Every structure is written in C-alpha cells, then in structure tokens.
Image 1: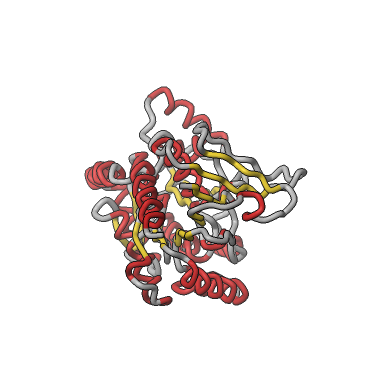
Image 2 (image 1 turned 90 degrees about the horizontal axis):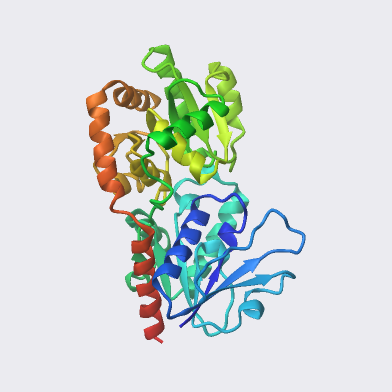
Length: 372
C-alpha cells in the first residue's frame, strides 16, 4: 500500500493533543510496519522558522515538503489511502480511499467555547467528511456517540481506536531525576507544594472553575500551596486574568505556558494532585500522562473522562467549584486515599500505548485497502 498522511498538526514546534497523537502514531507505525510506503506531506515555506520538518528513521517513511503551496496531490502523487489525522487536514487525492480521525465534536457539545464563524466552518467540514471518508476513526466511544448523534454516520463507517501514551516520556522519576525536577520547578518560581492543571487555556478546559475551587481551598486552609497551570492560550481565554485579579490570586497561580516533554513529566511527578475538570474531552491525553507519572487525578464526570479514567480518578461535577475543591482537599490531605488513586492510575495507564493505537490503525488501513 501507498499511504499518504498529512503532518500539518505537528509541524509547529509547539503542538497540542492532536499533534501529539499524529506524531506518536507515525513514530509507532514506523516501528511496526516496514512493508508499506508512507508518504508524509509537510507544508513549510522556505523562510518559515516556526515549523520543523519531521524525521523518521524507517526508510519506508518518506517526508515530502511542499515549499510553494503546490498542494497535497502534486507533492505526494497517487496513493491508495489518504489518512487525515484530524478533520481540518483533509486533502484531495483522486482515487485514494480516505480515512479521517475525529477527536471530538466540541463545536456541537460546547458551542460557547467557539466563535460562530468557527462553528459554521467546522459544521461544513464535518459534513464533507461524512460524505467523502471511507472510514472515520474516533478516539473514544464518547466521540463515536457524538458523531452518530449529530451527523448520523453509518455504523460500518466508524470505529473507535483509543489513543496512547509515550511511556518513554511519562513515567515515575527516580531519585537522580527527582533532583533535576526540583531544580526545574524552582526555576519556574515554585518552591512549595502545588496542584497542577494541564491543557490549552480555553473555556472548555474549565480553568475558571479551577480558580474558584482553588480559592475555596485556600480560604478553608485545606491547601495553601500554588496552582501551576501548563498550557498555551487558546479560544476566548481573556476572562481568566480578570478572575485572578478578582479573587486576588496573582501571587498564588503560576502560568507556565508551553513546556517540553521532560519539564511536563517533572511537573506531573511532583504535583500533589492533577486537576482536570474539563467540560468536554474527546480523549484527554493529560489523564493518561498523569496516571503514568503516578499523579493522583481529579477529573470530570462528563464526556470521555469516565471512559478513559474508569476507577483510577476521583470524579466531580465540572460546573460545581465546591465539589472540585472538596475532591482536591480529599486527595491532598488523605494520604491513604491518595496512594490508592496512584496505584489505580498506574494500572489504568498501562492499558494505553501508541503501539496498540498503531496496530489497530494499520489494521484499518488494510481493511480499507482490501475493500477496493
């Protein structure tokens, strides 16, 4: 098979969940498949320094760079299968069977987190995918159910493949690495215990209710350490600064922006608790990353969070700051309960790997190719 894949989501030096999925999937496919040819489309201008060309050691993974906006078909040529790792990377390639990974339907389930223009554009894009795709991969059963609900996609057109986690990046650190971690964390201005939030700063990640719950923790003296927030600014994030000023939390909340994988591992490992009360997640990478680092998790009782976490987290109503505060207080102050959560998290984290994701994705490639 000749398989074309768009690398758009991880060309930027800083990328979020979809980029992590696409890059990790290709890396794992390159480790298990030496039979098929993978043609990887990378659109990058000559003087664009913000993007980097991906490199894969496997000889059957060939990166084709589009320097002059020539388009996928002209740069890649004929392929048997075109896999778009996200709906917004769909390209035209005559004769190719199209596979698209749909990560979430946030614009339907949480429209208040998007502009009307973005909602209209995404609606049109999803309708196009429903018509053109031979197969749609959903990253969770929750996303699959949303897709069926809003777009009535036939059952034979959709499948669920959970995403994985890179256990070479996310793992419990040893004593030697612990010294490095403490040094890095101090460098970022944190010298006391902290609770951790990870995710792009946008409405659905629910940072405002995290801040309200954190304020309650401090007021009740259930936790007096810092709140560390890791993530880039995203959709409609402007209200957060005003809320911090209103709650007088400026000296207690540390915004760390985008961190390297190593730094992220250190912050997971050293956190008293990981707080992830998102209003909506298609999958929720940070949940699994936290599990694999041995971080106790507080997360939402909605969307894909219960599916991914199962019994390894403490669940809360994401719209109730008091509920979030009580859960965090229980985790940070009840050491036996904390230990139980950590052990369950390790067990649940072991269920996810990108090798499994790659094996199941390769099986879909073969299924679609053989149906020609």
